[in-house]
Amino acid sequence: MPALWPWDKVKLGPVKVSPMGLGTWAWGNTLLWGYNPSMDNELQQLFNFATSKGVNFFDTADSYGTGKLNGRSEILLGKFIREFQQGTQKDIVIATKFAAYPWRVTPWQMVQACKGSLRRLQLEQLGIGQLHWSAANYAPFQEQALWSGLAEIYKEGLVKAVGVSNYGPKQLVKIHKYLEKQGVPLSSAQVQFSLLSMGTDQMEVKSVCDDLGIKVIAYSPLGLGMLTGKYQASSTIFPQGPRGLLFSRVLPGITPLLDALEEIARKRKKTMSQVAINWCICKGTIPIPGVKTLDQARENLGALGWRLSSDEIAQIEAAAANSPQKMIQNIFQTK
Image 1 (cartoon, rainbow, N blue to C red):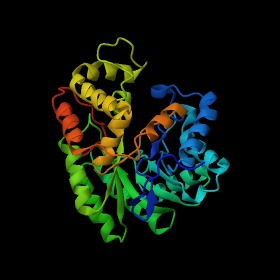
Image 2 (image 1 turned 180 degrees about the vertical axis):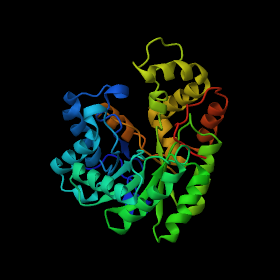
Image 3 (image 1 turned 60 degrees about the vertical axis):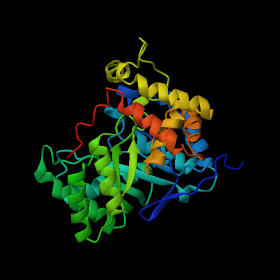
């Protein structure tokens, strides 16, 4: 069956990826996303569906999965890659992130973390190995060991490319300079980036990345689900747990943005999710919306193969600016 939405792949360092990837934070996370193993069959279905339609980029982390399920996301991805029957396993690019745990204080420990991810994924080489966050805010002495370990996994050929996540503009410039001296290119920077997260820090990170030739990977492009249209400010029904508390705080302050997304979606015959993801693509980022159902995968792929007009981009950005509430930023985000 031919792909429904043909598109050109995007160059991310030495690898080429689809203009949108898929995030797997929910795979194994019982606390925020209500995961249970009965979901695994549908997760495999959505993986097969997305891959068969041309999506070849999947983001994960060695910390994804709560409690005894730690590492579950990587294990599932590895299983799905092996069992995928289309014969295109070689084209799949896995980006995983290594947590800056307080006990990872030597480059060797970072190398061991990478090898642990490779074992769980049952891969010989990662597409992209990333630092999950910077230790600069609370343990600056640890930072150089993390950077050195990132350089080492690249030099040992354990990864095709390296990247960072939750690095602010100043720290991003520092690690880029450090890796450059090691002869290691910094290929990507993950940052919370959406119409709810388009503040000064995000735009400065984007500007730094553009100047240095680093590709921005946009995580939470749907604001943890607040930009999907599923939940309204007037609603009394929110997700359970910590997400529900966040929704109750943020949603009442983003009505202008939700109204603009709904208007454009209606005119375009798209969904609000598709418009929000397409905005990220139009800004030159690679969005990685999280998915845990086949319906979500189908909907997200509808963000590909078309582009918002400049007037539509201006309209929703103005609505975002006029929405008094913004997304809470990641506590590990550095300056």
